[in-house]
Image 1 (cartoon, rainbow, N blue to C red):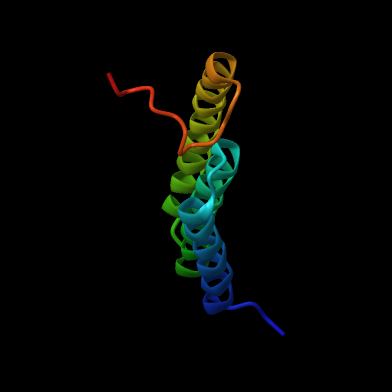
Image 2: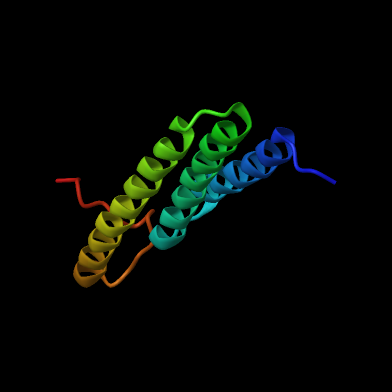
Length: 101
């Protein structure tokens, strides 16, 4: 059995759906970051699969950019989470009201 573009798009759609579900339902900041990473990986898989099946190399370049942005987002996000945890000793997103008053 050969893998077609449809197979890659189905896996990517599943990853994207799991990421969106996790982002909408999780209250923990670390779980939210992981869900956003799943969404970005789904986008990178779409770019790479399209480049492979359509014969253009731009998809891999976009995928590298997506992975780079995901790594930067993870680094900045984890730094913010550590700073918030040091202040409040809690990572529940519903209890954080840093911008109020």
